[in-house]
Amino acid sequence: MEIFRVTGGAPLVGEVAVSGAKNSVLKLMAVALLAQGRTTLTNVPHILDVTIMCQVLRRLGCEVTHENDAVTIDVPAVPGNEADYDLVRRMRASINVLGPLLARCGEVKVAHPGGDSIGSRGLDYHIAGLRQMGAEITSEHGFVIARAARLTGAKIWLEFPSVGATENLLTAAVLAKGTTVIDNAAREPEIVDICAMLSSMGARIHGAGSSTLEIEGVEELKPVTHRTVSDRIVAGTWAFAAAITCGDITIRHGVAEHLEVALDKLTTAGASITRDDSGFRVHMPNQPKAVDMVTLPYPGFATDMLPMAITLASVSDGYSLLTENVFDARFMFVNEMMRLGAEIRTDGHHAVVHGKSWLSGAPVTATDIRAGAGLVIAGLRAEGVTEVSDIYHIDRGYPGFAEQLASLGAKIERVSAPDPEFP
Image 1 (spheres, rainbow, N blue to C red):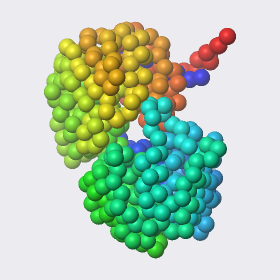
Image 2 (image 1 turned 180 degrees about the vertical axis):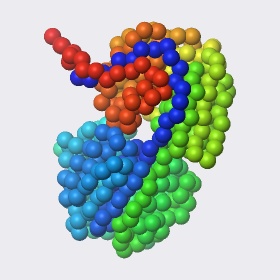
Image 3 (image 1 turned 180 degrees about the horizontal axis):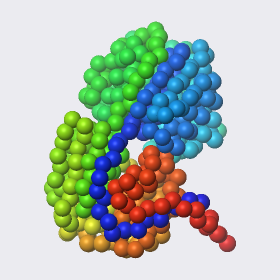
Image 4 (image 1 turned 120 degrees about the horizontal axis):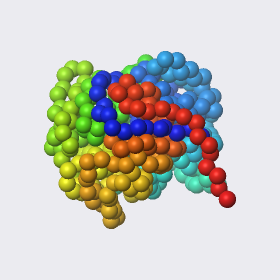
């Protein structure tokens, strides 16, 4: 197996560039299924999840090429309608083929998804909404099977503003007969990006970026070329990395407006933040001050940023209270942070962190994409050497992570290590 070996002690200083959003491009690739012909996505990050999604689309009969920062998807007149378990289990975003394939094919069979193990993220909202649009849905032998000769518009209220459910219902509704209204819809920039691509394909969507989406179904859509929105979670990771290491990082192509709550928290912690047309800069001149944070759906503090928030709290002056309201198992990461000497107590959805000046290097294991990034950055603020295993998680979401860290002055190397032995 491969690990990241990190030697702490140096602040991160310099400039990084942020590419397209993982949480958008994977869904945009699924959106391409809605139109026969060649769709091209640009500003695509070089990450493992994009490679997996390319394989999913090829299994569905598409011709897919990924060169430089562009993915081209040539969709046949009749795409396949079955997404196999061996690929879907590796990445939860592959469930996003459900809506487009149901709309295009009238029948779809998709394996229950895998991906990060960070809590119960079921498909209840997806299934309930599609049923309201006329779909017959069953679960058989590990697959979700949905059928509908043609979906019909419906008024759908989401009990929780689920990003995945909003995406699947949105992409199903664009080819439905009549008008669909989704109330309490997710408002994330990635949803706005999907709406922008769908609109350029010929969809009729009103309310992008608000909690109510109105979609007038059309007969067909056309393929397009679309540029993926910048990755706000990667940009936020670099912002927190600057604060955690008492560094100074300029984040090019980062959209500060997508990170208002996070940047406000960093300012409260003592960071200096400046913005310009090409991105923003984060400078933390002294040990951070303790700050409380609560995760909420957008525009609140993103759940994906919680591992970075815990890492920041662990090296801040004072006590921080962190509350997780979105995914119920984000705190799996806490045990690994405690191996680095962090003082953390958890109680249900809450964590109390007593900050200190330094952590202590130790072997740790990445439990998901964002936890992996948080552990690497924690290692940069730790005395001695930290070895992070299961780094394939990080590869799923951060393009060239070690190389970018090294360009900022980090002492990090990717090395082979023997696989763990079990009795």
